[in-house]
Length: 208
Image (cartoon, rainbow, N blue to C red):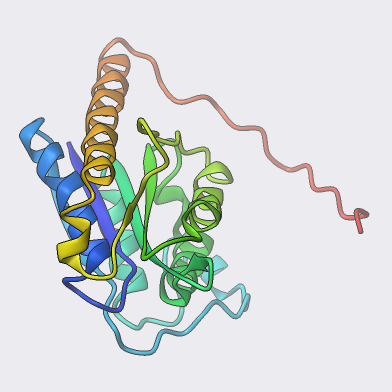
């Protein structure tokens, strides 16, 4: 089993990465393989709703190396943790632009796989940021993995995060719950329990 962790910060070794590494370490200790993927700090194109991905299922037409790479890695992964810093009480524009395209073009790679969101902030805006990221999960039939507190850490520098004992504990408890859920899903599949069949086709277009 493998969990893919996305670092949505512009800093490869900042506070968000510190929190993700705490999760990854606990997952590895539980026997779950992990990969942390830094989303980079180059400019990122957002989704233009061009719909071209309908002609090439599972791939964004704007091939900038990161979005389609995430979709491919997602197909090989069993669970996900998306991490973001807090900018103006919301997730980074980087992770939002990437996830808009990832889920629009490659949603099938995520369906029915458990996921969690974590946020890093100096002070505030964390719960609002978590709420935004979790909406990608709940529209994609993904079980949301929780912890013993809202999944956030605090600090201006990585050294501050390492002093946030409760935040780091929350990350480790998140990892334990993720490992447990992955094993439950694996055990269910071994017993012949498959994900539910989804209804489709109904679209209400008159709501304004």
